[in-house]
Amino acid sequence: MKTCFLFLLALGLTLFPATSRAFDDVQITASRTKLDSSRNRNKGNTTVESKDIAYTVKVNSSSFKELTNVTVKYKIYYQVVELGNKSDPDIKLSAGSHTIPSLLTNKPVEFETDAIKLEKASLDPGWYFTNGANGRAQDKVVGLWFKAFDSTGKQIGEYCNLNSATKNKKWED
Image 1 (cartoon, helix red, strand yellow):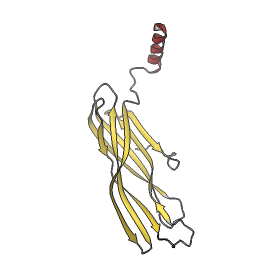
Image 2 (cartoon, rainbow, N blue to C red):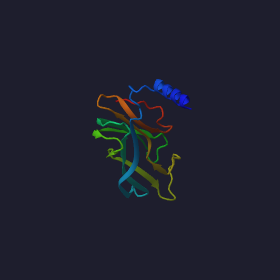
Image 3 (cartoon, rainbow, N blue to C red):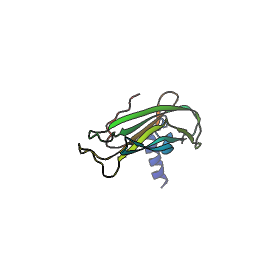
Image 4 (cartoon, rainbow, N blue to C red):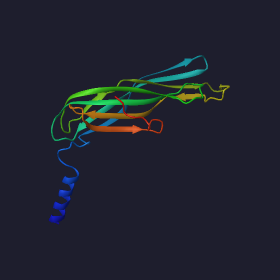
C-alpha cells in the first residue's frame, strides 16, 4: 500500500511540477444582479420593459500565499433584438476590468461589473407586423467570460460560459 502511494505521488509530481502555477489558483463565479427596471408604452401599440443588470463577481484564491494586484478582466456578450426586424440580432460586448490589491486564501473578494440595459418589447394583442416578424423581442445575455491575471500578467484563473451564438469568439485585449 505504501509503495502504491509513493508511486502515485511521484507520478503526480512528474505530471504537475510544483514550479508551474496552477490554473486553479483563483476561482471566479458570477451571479446576475438586477439594478433598475421600468415599463412604458411606445408608439401607442407596444409595451417596452427595460432593466439594468450587472454581475456580482466573486473571486476566491486557493493558493497558499497572498496574491497581490490580481486583475480580473471580463467580457459580457448580449443580444439586442429589434422589434419588427426579421434579421439576426446584433451581439454587443460589454468589457471591463477590476484590480484586487490583495487576495488572501479563502477570503473571497466581490466586485460588480458595469451595468447593461436589456429591453423586452411586445405588440399589443391583435396587432402584427405585415413583414411577418415576431410580435415580441427580448434582449438577453449570451455569454460571460472572466479571466484573472497575477501582477506579472500571467493568467491564474478563468470562468467561461458561452452559448452557441458566441462560442466562436476569441479573447482579445
